[in-house]
Amino acid sequence: MESGETRTKSSKKSKPRPTQSYYVPPAQRSLTKKHINQTIKLSNYQTTINEKEDVNLSQLYISYSDENTKKIYDCDTDNEKEEMQRAIENISRKRRPLIKNTRNVIKATNDYSAYENTKYEDLEHVIELYDFPPTLKTQDIMQLYRDASEDSMYVKWCDDTHCLLVLSTPAQAQRALQIDHEIIKSRPLECSSAIAIMTAHSSDLKPAMKRPQTNMQTARRLINRHLGTKPSLSKEDIELERQALRDAREQRRLERQSEKDAWEGNPRNAKS
Image (cartoon, rainbow, N blue to C red; front, side, top):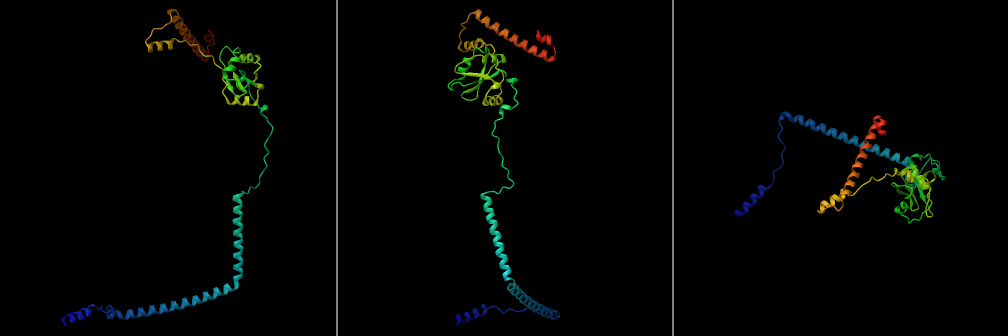
């Protein structure tokens, strides 16, 4: 019995209390009632206005749609056609670009390189060699024209059958033109081919310089010092080499002095 009574008591206590309104003082009760009535009236008025506006808008929409359905459909079709046309034009432009105001440019087919104003005064020491076998090498050409120059020369290749022979002076070039060979031909640069002229203009063809005289004294001294051996030359030969070195130094000193005198305006000293 006691357990049953405890259960009923717990069940009664677990029920929630009913909600109660907050306490309002008597002085404010009249004000709250007026405010509630005003809000109710305003809400009713707004609902009626909204209902009227919805009805009017629906009527306007229905009337507009009934009258202008055909016009809208026509406008939509026109817009679709314009969009399709633009898409087709864009595709065609991507494949083949549209070029306006084009001009046909006709390239010149004549070769006017022979009429160019070229100066050959600075290249009188150069001649062209042509119509020789492609198997010829640089050493072979220099061996064929060794009689034209006692100093040095060098070869500037154009192709397998054309080259330029560069000598030290124009006199040596004229001497080389007088040498006749069966396997090779020569001519001055003024009468040379187009490939030879192009090579001459694109290269720095300075006159060939004579190699200065040298001897083996320094090299022999370094070798003997490294190996620890004595020189095999006699005293007379060693003295001749030393004298040649002294003469070369004196010659270089005189050349530098003559250049200095020429720049300072003393031609007598330069001549002496």
